[in-house]
Length: 324
Length: 248
Image (tube, rainbow over all chains, first blue to last red; front, side, top):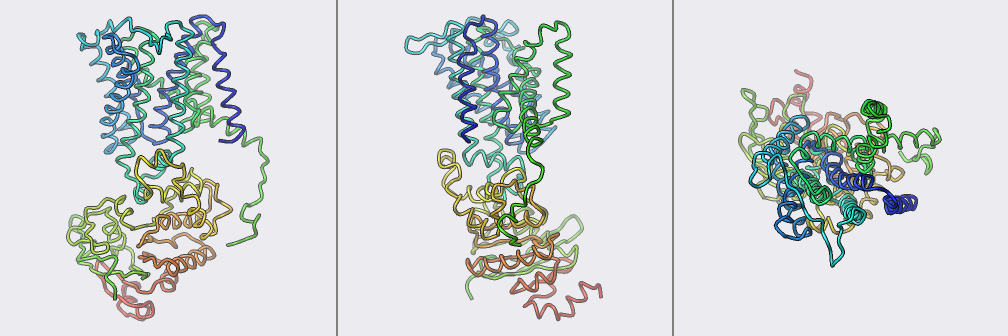
């Protein structure tokens, strides 16, 4: 990380610390939503952006996390323990869902994951005795740690912020390690990667499982945030929304999903003053962005920086004298 | 002579009614540079893919250091000390040259968990930089591999094949599409590496001048069978080889 990047990250964290101060409940709720959707989108970014495996089931993993956490906390188990179980469950299910990716790729894989999301939605809706069916589950307690509660919206925001920073730290660690390089190799050239000793079956499964675990963690925050969950919150449309976050922000870039989540969650709120036109304006902006910059907002930033750079650059081999 | 490092034993490969490779056997010894040549459709690539575990032979088997490797996956072959390059460009285009070469060695270092919790470069930057220097790619260390010229990408591909210190390297048409200046450089680097490290090479190539000047022994395939074997000058004078190439 360069000095400039470190300063920008510190500035970003400072903004996040002061963002909810003096704001009403709705704004704080929206900011919390952005934080937890960013966590989930980070996971999808690993699976899709870095490892190149298409997934249309990220909302399903949020659902697994949310329902497991809700059921456990409603039966008196602490949120911390419930979250560990939620993350483990999502990881395990993600690992199983990764198996089809060993056989099918691209749009075929998209359909497999889409089917899984639909299947989970039906299970959540139909297994009424466990999940509450269409009525969902209500009244999940917000966690408390060593006597400090997160009952108020502001304290829950700061709790979500800690979880978000922790998730970003874990993701950064994975991506900077040889695992991160291996995920990128899987996306760019799996046959070559395998010839270099990379076990691509294992790496593909890990890409799904780790991405899903991030989804599960986001779900375990969603349950106490809203204190009401129902199957519709984890339907296919939400997986598409998460995909939009990753793509709009910049697939395969670390900060892409966070920017994308800001656009998908916050921009509609900003545009709300336009009343009935906001969806049209929002859709138009997204289409223009995708046409002009398929690499999303981060890609757009890179394009602008490239345009500002001087056009003529000396050949680097000539700087040291011709060698070949 | 020492025991062979690579043995191909009675390999045949049938695709439906077509016999692409027919009962081919040969040994390769440590430090040798073996050329595998033949006209188009002679079965060279099929044989190569059988050796590399990407095709399962209909009959016969392959041994590395006396150990059968018939059902070993390509990743495990690499861990057994078999490196390879590809006929087509096969780098990781969005990664820097340095990252490409580190990636080529990282799976051979430590365990899965130690790679997650250890150093980001798996302690390989120094070794990777030596290889970058060896192939004279230093000015491009941090350049995305995909933005290099064709010949430079071929050099990166070769450097990746050597990163894990393999005992045997299979080079699939290394001269294909490479200009004369770069080709001379590549050949010189391969010969130097062979002398310095005693690495064994098996080379498939169409460029006869390149093969004749690089290899110590040549096997000629035609219609899936070995028709000649010997030193470059013997092969050059062999009438069967001339007929196979000229269709006589």
